[in-house]
Length: 378
Ligand code: NAD
Image (tube, rainbow, N blue to C red):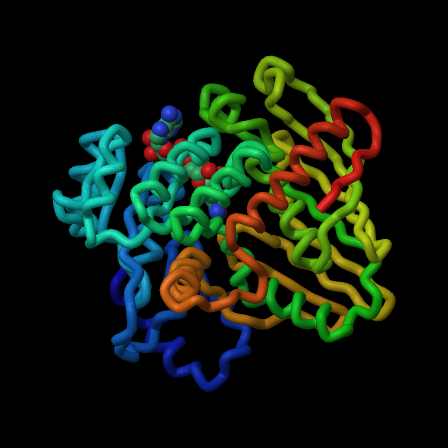
């Protein structure tokens, strides 16, 4: 393992003068290779000291990716499971004084060695946990969806502002090179007037007892978990926020997908420029991770568009050849710069951005319920 990784790192280092070489074929996301940090340039700037809350699947991915970070460091944890605490302390060298559970993490207020908490618990818990972290005076990074409706999201934004802490949402695609290239091309007018976006987001969900199928913990169904990628993608690909929504729901299994837990929703978004988006969100179909955008002069396609990578992309000009980067490593490096140095990302990753997606989700659920077009006021 070590030798393969060393080989790839050396190989990548030797290619630094060719930053746009298509290295995708080298990238193996299953190995979680952190190729972007192949250079050993010393870093002496500020480091964001992070505690992870909710040590599940995604937290493990983030923690592993953070091993390659220079500007962010995993220093603490919040868990309700003593066995996980011990395991993580060993794996990530986390001192006892930086370990908390769900009852006592407010005490972090007295811990000067933690700057920020990254909340990776089920969606329905984010609101209360983020507010408690803000009240403890720590910056917050919250996973998507940041809450289960726009009202909750706005409360989180307001409290973080009041407490003078930053609130960021784990929108890793906002920092992904192929995605950013399409955004650059759109801004430069290379597609001409953009008229249409299609977003397909879905997978077949397994275990019917998991929290993702529990209305209280998930806040909904596929829309909250995966459909949000098409909503968010429509907004950053088109560079606009929608002013109306229509939506239709299909449910083939009302036992697995109970009331309030959406299985499949097709939705359409209308934008101020006249552009429209047509999207699919589902927990009952596989191989759906595709964005397509077309304008008067050109097109762009990402397929896959939001998975852990490599992201594959092409436009009317040809393949997008940027090397794969581990999304969570880049995200944490950038989030450190945003929190500690006030850096402005190309596409916002703040709480306000998260609330916009929730406002659209609220409107989609309303459109499904009422069976008619819902206007969105900004
Ligand atoms: P998971 O089930 O693997 O982990 C959730 C963690 O929360 C577990 O450690 C669990 O023990 C803990 N937890 C605390 N209180 C709980 C409770 N009352 N009920 C259930 N679990 C509880 O889930 P995950 O896949 O890691 O997802 C966590 C969050 O991260 C979700 O908001 C999800 O949308 C988000 N996520 C984001 C990405 C991304 O690419 N940005 C990918 C996966 C998940």
